[in-house]
Length: 316
Image (cartoon, rainbow, N blue to C red):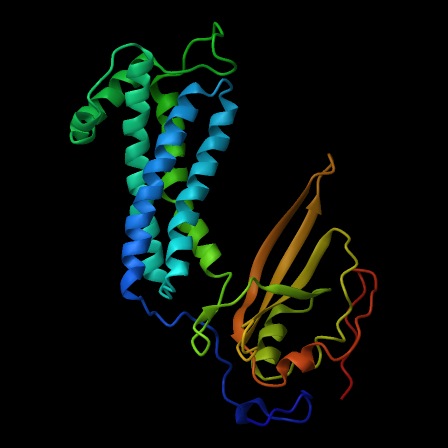
């Protein structure tokens, strides 16, 4: 395909519309078994550790960190196993992570109640409890009435949390364990591309430029019209708080032929206490690059200017 790099010397109507990368949808035979079977095994081990750590955590605020760590584990374990078996189907991946998260949530309640009664010197039958969800729900209701913990350290004289407040805490825990892993898996799944020719995943995306912002509608139109020569001429972001564009490229590390481009609008803010936060929005997500595009994007040396300086007009 012949590509002309100047926006003034070609008609976009004569060029095919740019294509975006999507997984092929292929699910190898071992993919489901590895992701679902292996994921549930990992969820069982993780739920056991999480339940006992949660019960014996001396500071209640540490329980929130435990919950976040457990949710991360529930997302990463099946994702790693399915990526290792080369599953290239986002819907199957997210469904598998959802099932694993549900199993992990159920099991952590079983382990937690078992540990709680064991701690109170009233051991219960683990298998019988696991096989009777109604008994599990009844025990949860009873414990909610009496309360479980109080803010601060174990041994404080504060009244244990119970009732509606404890239901809200448990609801937040359920949301974190059941839905956050799926959201995280979706984000992590979008961080790789798969080269069907080489039968392998790419490495993580590489940021090759951070520039001052330009109108977002112009960015997508120009990129889809095969005009990439303007990218090296954009003034580079100087690191100050504010908005900037992040340019990222994925590449097959083997053949170097599969390349994609992602452009994100990033807003960096600093509050009065000096804490930095960023908000990211993707403008172009893994647009497939054609031969010669990589060279066109990186041809000219970067120019560092103030973040308030507007991008120079392109020479025709």
